Length: 389
Image (cartoon, rainbow, N blue to C red; front, top):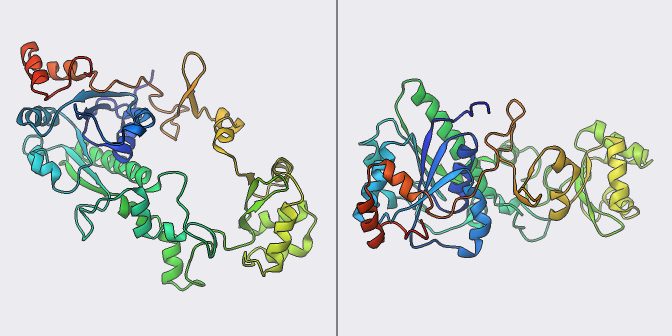
């Protein structure tokens, strides 16, 4: 197997839940050795544990109680040998535990230390409890999501969580490049709020430069404001996504439906009182989703079906791109990561998901911890029991 890009990089993952887990998954799939540190007492959101466990593939799992001095000591020993430390505690917590950036840097000056938080290390909301929906709401993204004059709509994927994971991984790899060139380590402050706010670049530019009305929910070019870029219901109660922003694609659509009178209506407002919007809506209600899908493929007009999750996971495009991973029995188990290919490959590919703490003994033994010490660590609760790791 060809060498992976991050082969030889060791990552100590102290994060919890989706944002940090996704960041370290990206690094693991690119070849990094990721040692995930879990709490021997278990974690929050146990109801999501089966789903979140897919983030642990290609990682090693150990248990350490970071509140205990011995747990902190072992964590620092691991950090001293790591190229990267990832953590997702609230601001100040890692330092209070004795495993913050300055404490790790004193032992490992070349470390890339990445802190993933919701609001960032500074600002009036830095320590406020929140989740994906909250960062989206305050950053302004939720206010732009939904139908015109309707309520905000929660996206079907966790935009803030996943976007910060992506940016944290990218920033970490960028810092590793500096270290590889003989430079110093780095401290990275990755905030969900910041990343979502940065993704508002287009509507913000429209607002600041007064390029039309202030972007609002369902009322500007890319969120349902135009006839040519919208969602339309079909005769069988399903939906189609029309993305004919460019004149050539809108012209293709108009020719396909034999409505040349609509050629100059692409950018008409998608409101009930607009005749062009009413006409196009009525057109879509005359055919089924399948019929519109066939028309879209033939007409080359940026017209696609809105698929339900089971349909999307079994679609021909999903299969052709090799996005669904299956076990030996052909049972789907995961989606392929990373989402890009390099030289025709997707990095490491799906690996086994470790049991919580299954690598504790091997990882700590490599640090020089003896069998007798391991038994004492188990008795004192610093690490999990043999059954749990």
